Image (cartoon, rainbow, N blue to C red; front, side):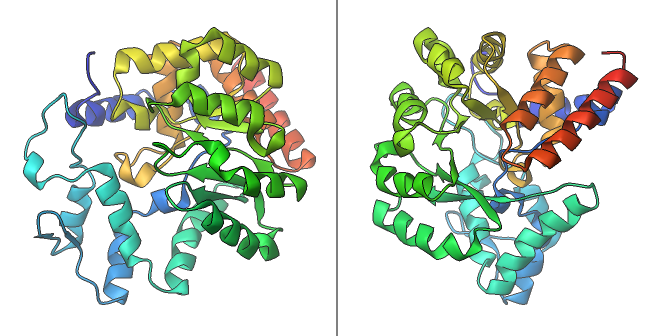
Length: 341
């Protein structure tokens, strides 16, 4: 395909993947290393918080007011793509970031932020999921702001396992935040950073993250699939054992399909550790980690053995305690034995 996958095709693909009822993928233990907690703000929770705060939900650009939950739900599926293909009712649609940051408007009180986090954690607790936080700095804010945020979180060390960097990276290279990363590394935090797909300085930013960030190079690289275009970068990533967290459903929405999955396959075939995550599932057609695993299996023509390798890599890459990781490895071995892998 020349352009990103249109909404109707994505929704059809989502249903096709679920209907496949892939028992092996359903059984595999899944480690989610790349989900933004604010990206789990479902329409239902957003509506609840807006009502509690006496807010009217609307799209400021067009003045569209969402009068009920059903209209708000529908709005999550109408997102304007990048130039290059058409979407019906584009004038009334909104981009991903309009939706994403528009959701922040309902986060007013401490209770709102608590409810956002607990909405996720209460659901995953019922699935025997254990979680810790990675605190991400916003790179469109200043390095001084990042340091201030870092110092504010130190009293929560028992909950925060690592430090990350996200948001708009145009002309905002990772090493702009080197001082706070050096501090975090010295304080014993694990470190990672986003290198978004298709950024104008993608290769430069990937090199900074892998080689230099925190004076040691990062432990993980978030996104960064442009590395597949450069054998030297791939060699360095593999040499250092840097794991990559990829979120393929998000790429479907704004990158050419015939580029995304060959790149993921190239990285995998090079022996680079990869973990598949969901990024911002509430804003991506309600696709969570299961959908992303099913998607990458189909589009990269991964075998069950390949998917088991991805599952093992995610366990190895995660920053959980050794005992938790050993428990997950045993669970993976049991699933592989059950399916004769």
